[in-house]
Image (cartoon, rainbow over all chains, first blue to last red; front, side, top):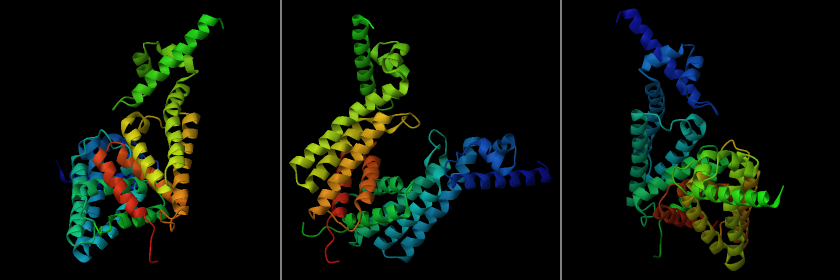
Length: 185
Length: 185
C-alpha cells in the first residue's frame, strides 16, 4: 500500500468511527452502514472497507465508547470509599446509558467481540466495587456478589435507558437503601 | 350469517386464541399469523378473518392473558395488608412475566388497544398498592407514587424477563428493604 493510500485509510477509519460514535448518542438513530456513510460523507463501500466489514466497524465504535467507562470504574475505586465509589459509578453509568440510546438497540445478532469484552470488563468492574463494599461492611453481605451484579446491571439499565434524571436518582435512593447492611439478623 | 357458519367462526376464534396464548409462553416463539395458523391447524386466511386482522388477534390474545393478572392485584389488595399485597403481587407478576416470553418481544409497532388498556390497568393496580402501602406507613413516603410505580414496573420486568427464580427473590429482598419507611429524617 502506498503512503497516500495508507493516509486515506487512516482518515476514513477515523471519519467512520466518529460518525458511528455520534449516531450512538442520537435517539432513534440506528447504527447502519448507510447511516454511518451519510453522516461521515464517505461512500458505503469505503466505510465497510475501512474496517473490513460492518460488524467490525460497529464493534470498534461501541468498544471505543465503553473503554473510558470501564477505566472510570477503576479511578473511582482508587479514589473513594467502596460504597461511595459504587454509587458514584452507577450514577455516571446511568447518565452514560441515557445519553447513548444506540447502545440499547440494534446490536443483537451482530458479531461484536470487542464490545462483548468491554461489557464483560464493565460487569467485572461493578462486581469488584460490590465485593469491596461488602468486605468493608458498607453493603449487605447476605446476597452473593454475582446475583447483586446481575441485579444492579439489569435494573440500572432498565431505568436509565429512557428514563429521566429524577427517576435515576429515585432508583439509586431505593437501591442503596435496599443494599444497606442488614442488622439484627 | 347462517348458524353453522356462525358456529365455525366462534370455533375458529377460540382455536386461534388458544394457539396465540400457547405461543406467548414459549421461549423464542414469535406471535405471527403463520405461527398461530400452524399451531391451531387453521389456514392463515381463516385466522386473520376470525379476528378481522392480525393485530386484532394478537391484541385479543395478549389482553386475555393480562386480564386475570390485573384481577389478581385486586384480590390481593382486598385480602392482605397493603405492603404484603404489593410484595405478593410483584412476585406473582414476575413469575408470569418469566413464563410468558412472547409478551416482551415482537409487539412493538402493532396496534393493540386492548393490550394497552390492560397494561394501563396493571400499572394503575401497582400504583394503587403502592399508595395504600405508603398510607399505612409500610412503605417510604419520601418518593412519589408515580416515580415508584415506574421504577418498580421497569426493574421488575428487567429482572423477570429472562431471570431465574433466585434472581427474582434477591431483587424483591433488595427492593423491599429499599422501600422500607425512612426513620430518623
